[in-house]
Amino acid sequence: METVIIKNGCRSQESGVRSQESGVRSQESGVRSQESGVRSQKVFGLSDNTLKHQGRLVPSSIALSHSEQFDRLAQGCPDALPVAFLSGDPCYDRLLAGVPHRLTYRKALGLRHGQKLITVNSTWKDESLYGSHPSVITELLARLPYDHYRVALVLHPNVWSSHGPRQIRIWQDEALRSGLLLIPPHEGWRAAVIAADLVLSDHGSVSVYAAALGRPVLLSTDGRDSVDPESALGRLYEVAHPLDPHAPLVPQFEQAEKLRELTHETALTWVSSAPGRALDLIRAEAYRLMGATPPPGRPRLMAPPEPEIQSPEPTSLWVRVRPTDDGLAVHRGPAPEPGGVLVCSDAEMDHRLAAAADVLTIAEEALPADERLWSETVFAHRLGALLTAVYSAEEVRLRTRDGSLLCVRFTGPVDDPGLVTGVLAERLVTSGHALAPKMLAALAPLHLRVSEERTLTIPFETAKG
Image 1 (tube, rainbow, N blue to C red):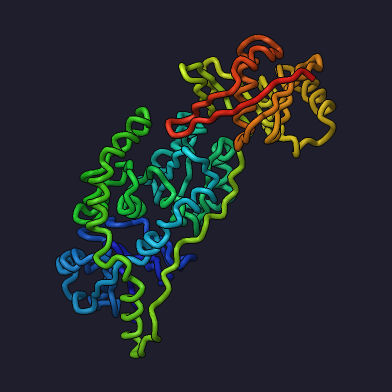
Image 2: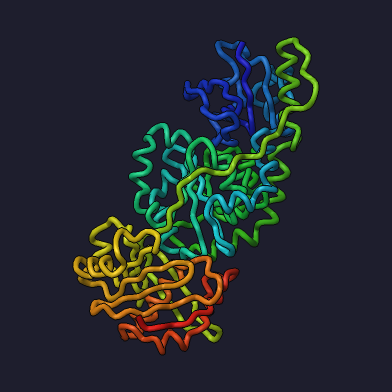
C-alpha cells in the first residue's frame, strides 16, 4: 500500500514518493511542494477524492506538518484520521539549519556589502507569477540600480521540466546579461531564500517559508482564488502586501518591510507544529510501518549547500553620476538612463549595443593583445566610442582616439575597479573634455554612494601617459 505524505494541505514531493497528480518522481529529496494550501473542490490533498480510490482509503500513513491540518482532514476525509500523524516539515527544518550560513550563501551568489537581494519565486501554471507576468524579471532589472539590488529567479522544477533548461535560458538571455542570478531547478532555492532581503512570490509554498524565516514578502494575487483560506498560505495572503507589477517597486518593498513582523508571525505560527523535529518524527513513523526498530542516534539535519551558479558581471551598463554635498551618487543599470553614459565591456557580444557604446572597457588580465593595439582596434570598429579603459585593482588607463593616455593610480585598496572605471569614464565623457586630468584630480579622493548602505572612498592620483 502506498505511503503518502501530506504537507501544508497538499500532496508533497519532498520524500521522493510518487505524485499521483503528475506521475513523476521528484528529482531532489527535499524539493518543496509549490502548491501549499491549493484547493481542488473543498481542501486539496485532505479530501476524499484525493485520499480514496473507489471508496477505499489509499495511504497507510499521512504526515501533517501542522496540528490544524487534523481539523481540516476531519472535515475532508474523516476516515483518514486514524492513519494521520504530526510530522513537522523537513523542508522548513533544512531552511532553519541554513540560516546561520546566510553570509556564506550571499558570498556564493556574488553579493557585495550593501547590496540587497530580491529573490523572485514562481510556481507553475498560468496563474503563477512567471505565468502571469513573464516580463517581471527584465522589468525588475531595468528599474532597479544594479549596485543596490541584485535579482535571483527561482522557478518551480515543473517549469524547467516542461520547457527545458535551454528554453528557460533563451527566455532569460537578456536578463542574464543584465546580471540575473538564475537558480538551478533542484538545489539552490533554499540558499536564495535565506540570502534574500525580500522575496517576491506567488501562491507557492516558498512564500510561507520565506515569511517564516522573517523575510519581507510581496505576493502576486493571480492565483489567490485557488488557495484554501484556512491554510498557512491563505492566512499569509490576509496580511501580506499584494504585488502591483505596474506600480513603482521600491515603495512596495518598503510596505513589505513594514509588514515584516506581521507576516513573519503569521507564517511562523502556521508553517510547522514541530520545528526542528521533522526527520525524527518521519523516521519513527517509517520504521513503525516497516515493523522495525530505528537505528540509534538521530538523523542528520543538513543545511542547504552553497548555490552553484554562474554569476557573470553585466557586459553593458548605463552609468549616471550625480554630484552631491558629500561626493557622487552613482546609478548603474541595463536600461538607458537620461543623461547616462553607455559603458560596455569588451566581452559584450551584442554588436549593436557595443557599437552604440560611449566607452569600451576590459580588465587588464583579459587583454587579448597589446593594450595600445586593443584600443586602436576598438576605435576602428566602434565608431561612436569616445574612450577605452583598461583596469586592474591598481589603476585605470584611459585612452582617446588620438592615442592620448591618462593613468589613474589608486593609492588605496579598491574592491570594485569596474565600478570606479565606469564612474571615471562617465565624468570624462559628461564633462566634454577628452582627458581632463585636472578635473579628475579635483575629485580625489572619490566619494561614491552606490546605495544607502554602501559608500566607497577611493584615493587616487592622475598622470598623463
